[in-house]
Amino acid sequence: MLQVNELSKRYGETIALDCATISLNAGEIHTILGENGSGKSTLVKLLSGIIAPDTGDILLSGADIAGATPSAFQAQGFATVFQEVLVAPDRNVVDNILLGCDGLLKRRIPRSQRAEIAGSALSQFAVTDVGLDELAGHLPLAAQQLVVIARALVRKPKILVLDEATAALDFADREAVFELMRKLAGDGCLVIFITHRMDEVMSLSDRVTVLRSGKVVTTLPREKLNPDELLSLMAPEMIGAAS
Image (cartoon, rainbow, N blue to C red):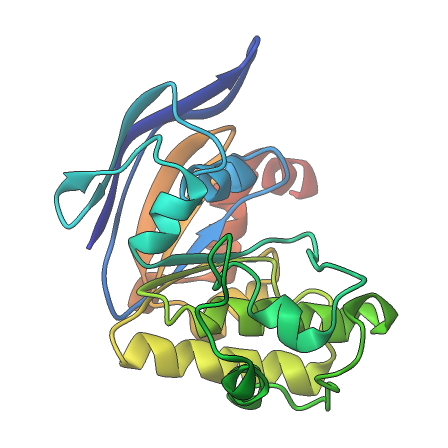
């Protein structure tokens, strides 16, 4: 479904991503694993259209979309939940969930349907009750992240990118999001999951791609996942120091 082919990005002398090649399939939870500085955030930004690669291709069903705008990525079925919780603090929960769904001059979603659509998106996974009329800026951080995840779901994504998106959630909501991820993948969605928690990697991943210093080290299927091996692939110097 999605092929990242020889993708590279440099910031001055810093190589953030170096000839990364990854194949990602519809209907799977594909985890991207790596330490800080491994290239995970750069990959997320490239797959969201926020930045353009210096070299390489992003092929969606064979068509190259590298360097397209964020709106073009969204039009192709991408939705990204970033590590940073991004809300419009002075607008209510309904408006935050539907951000980007309306045109510049008129609402595409009628006023009479907005609360129902926003509430339906939240009800797919949120355990914590989030008031639809609440200003997003008045909500706790965890509730704000639920709003952002609901915003991604409203788009009915074909490819959902979750960048440490569950880090701010409590246990019940986090488990509910994990169940949602499994359901989406079962329905044919490609879920790209960025996390640093090994328990999440082991319980959720259909495949894992390990990044280190901007390079793809390997991609492993679920049946070959081993926590100690994954740690050694991420940071072999740490394993060597410990031994």
